[in-house]
Length: 188
Length: 193
Image (cartoon, rainbow over all chains, first blue to last red; front, side):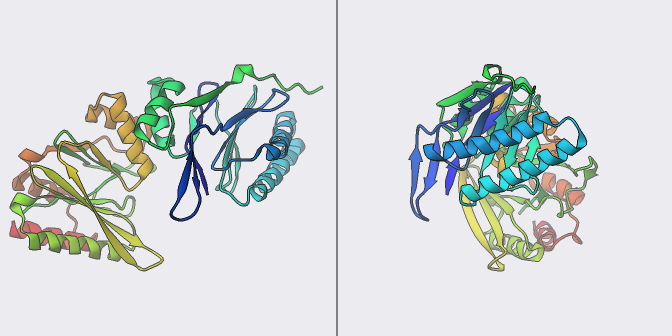
């Protein structure tokens, strides 16, 4: 089992710490201190973060392909039939990703210039849009983080630092991807 | 001998003061009497040990155990206090084994400690205390804005001023013997105090 400790979206950015706990067996865990959890797709049009699963470099193309398929289906859906089709694509992608990760109950946050999505393998409806103005976080430090950013008391970066002081599983080192750094997806 | 029964989304110990809720809100915003056990299953006893014999504490612990078994669910907290230490007892119902486990955590009175059945809620309260520089009332108000079902109506009781008469007043408000087995023990404890 892999525990990734904090992955969040707030204020037009994906943010994640770099700590990762790998449960080797019932008595032993290994901590990784430089585990990047957020990535930008090769095309630069999508960013995504993964919590509770750490893919190998060879697995990234598959994950990126599945997430991009959902994003393209969702963002091109401008009528009822296309929306139904997009839901089917999303459901299949969720199943494929879950099988691919060996059934791990992983979480994804996917961000484009237009929308933000969350993929929660533990939910019956795993894909959901995230309202851009509402902070969203998963992982062991999520409750701390969401409280720190509530009513804009702290910026996401400062909230993550504060969370790391309260939750020893969360590292102060973190990565950020700004939404403004992504290229828009254009359909012709 | 004194005891307080409460169901609580969070019990907070900070700077020698115990904070516990007066009311709860359900998910549609109704104010709920604390005697109802069905919404939140955390229960807390606050027992100043200077006034309690060990046998009485045992009896209350047993009451909590019976309560836990009676409710067939989760956490019960018993806070046994003296002027130096709070002992948090948690009775945890294990569904698979059809029995409960008891865990005990000693906490120095000067420490800040947030207990909640919902670990995420405990973290939220603790973070808000950071944001509001450990002003518990401000922190609880912020949590209630963030989570509408979380009450901001808390008792704030300094442990040193915690006496039997205060507890009796609170207990008269919240003690509902028909609600759970634990309240029968509460009544007995109060009658003998």
